[in-house]
Length: 78
Image (cartoon, rainbow, N blue to C red; front, side, top):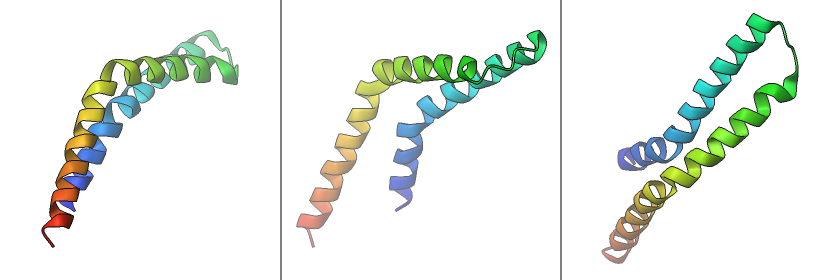
């Protein structure tokens, strides 16, 4: 169970972290320039998360596949 939570953090962590950082930077920019456009924060976050998933997708998929293999091995040993 603990291993599953660690793997969830490893899989979701990069995208969440990039989204938070980009959102923080955009919110500082909006506060500085007093631009209150809602789509201004959404589109850059969407693009940054998409690029992160493309770049880290192989890493995330390998973690997920290893976990799936270990789950099936544990099921077969029951």
